[in-house]
Structures are given as C-alpha cells and as structure tokens.
Image 1 (spheres, rainbow, N blue to C red):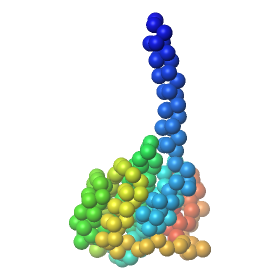
Image 2 (cartoon, rainbow, N blue to C red):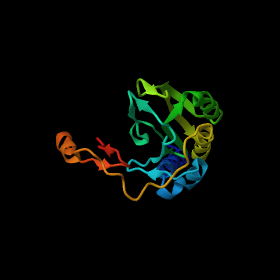
Image 3 (cartoon, helix red, strand yellow):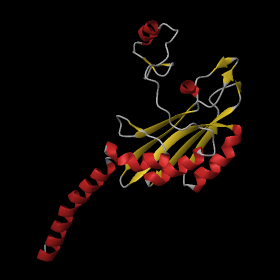
Image 4 (spheres, one colour):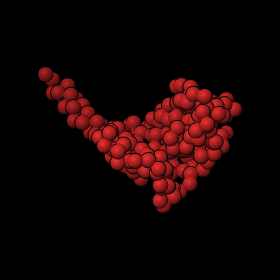
Length: 197
C-alpha cells in the first residue's frame, strides 16, 4: 500500500469515532436544555425518565359529561406534548383535546408551523359537548415546534398552566382494594386515582 493512501485511511479512521461521539453528545439533552422550549410553549414541562420533556395541558375549561357522568380533565380531557432530542433536532408528539369549533383553526396553525396531524378522532362516546382528539407529530428545531403548538393552543380555550394544589382532593373509593386487584400501587393525581403500567 502506498504511504499517502495509508495515511489518508488512518486519518479517516481517527475522525470517525470523534464525530460519532459529537453526534451522541448532541442527542442527549440535559434537563436545563429545555428552557427555550418552555419559553416558546409559555409553560413549564417536566423531564421524564426516558429523556423526553413533557407538557400536560388539561382542559379544565371544558364541562363534559358522558351519560350524565361528569368527566374530570385529568381522566380523559388532558392535552399533552412531549419533546425528545434527536441529534441537533427534536421530535415532538402529542394529543390535543379540542372542541369541534377549535379543530379547523388549530389545524391551520399547526400546519403553518410544520407540525403534522397524524389522527383526528374521539376517545369518548355519547359525550356532551362533543370533543375531538388530535394526535400530532413534528421534527425540527425544538423551540420552533413549541411555538407552533403554542400558537395553535392560542386558538383554543386551553387554560394557562396553573400550580397544582398542595393537597389532592380526597378520593371516595377503596384504593387499597384497587392496588390489591391490580397488583400495583396507584396515586391520587388531583382527585383521580392513577395507576401506571
């Protein structure tokens, strides 16, 4: 092998691991890296164990009933969006709870901001008033994606982020029996008994 070709191959082999390390470092977002996204969303997100940064946006403004039973926002009316760093970009996925008259203006704002609508359907049956669930996905610069979602939510009556009460309301159900039957411990999440699986 000629010396010049050998040196070129050696230099190429030495630069590959360095660039792989740089890409790997970019893909891991530290908790502090989400400030610009929080600012663009107009609310604070929560870092999740899997590295995503998630925003909960419960529709506490809606008064929805199914067959006369009032639905709490945390049970079935919770919009959310979660961001994850992928290289020097981010991916966002989410589900927005919308009234029928909010659907069209939200679609326009999301599409203008580069967010895809992957599904539009309902989770509830025979609810009043009717609510729709819009699944979203986007890839790009995280703060730009967050601004597009923020602008879309501005077309709705989704409440601004509020602080959770210091103590959750008491539950009128036997949570110990639920834990025993499911074989898992749940928690009181704002007056709703939540069990994660």
